[in-house]
Image (tube, rainbow, N blue to C red; front, top):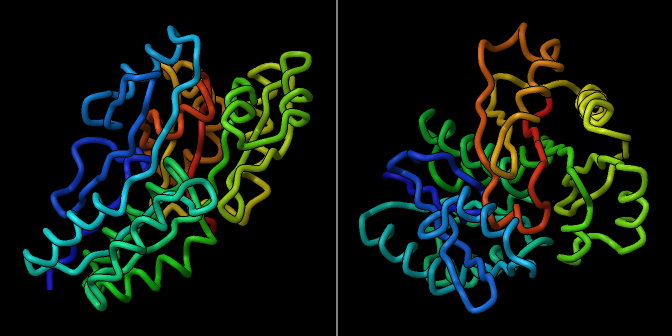
Length: 280
């Protein structure tokens, strides 16, 4: 039976997506102006508005109705569904998917990625790889639930201000991070954002990012991995790639890079770089 992979726009799937993948857009609102993430608001347009606007945009979860319509279309086409969502601790999107899936027992399987942006994305890519290996939807969902704990998302931010304003971290944590041009390194652990360390300046921040990656069991290059950045330029990310060659050059000729869109960019701001991978 053919399989449909459904995810939300917080996964920041780079275009073009495979035909087996459906991406449901989250809503991004700048005041009274509402946009569908990645549909009528590109990543670049989002950061242009973010820089220009005085107020922080608001993001809204994918609704049960959106998931319901997507599930109905897939099942009607004879497909079984694996839905991979943004961490349930960061959004109500997972709950929306679960509510919609109740109408399709044995046909739709929902997986909480426990992650965000490229951390969620590599799990979607893993689902596609397992599908290509011939796994059925239920087995893919079980495998993702088992392997998602091996995904690491580590990021270097320009500031903690956006996480504070979005209520993702405390004001005290953000205040400490804002002193002395400190660049915080954060991660997603057990579905939530945590601060791993702080460094003065981008150069030291890059070094700290490399150190945090080296603390893991090592990158499993046989499974998906991805680099991402927020804002209008990838200059900082390219510098990081150059400075961290020792981590990659023995394993791959190039690194896949994408932009991080508004669903997550709202909460981290421009000037961030991130790495997502499966641990060995």
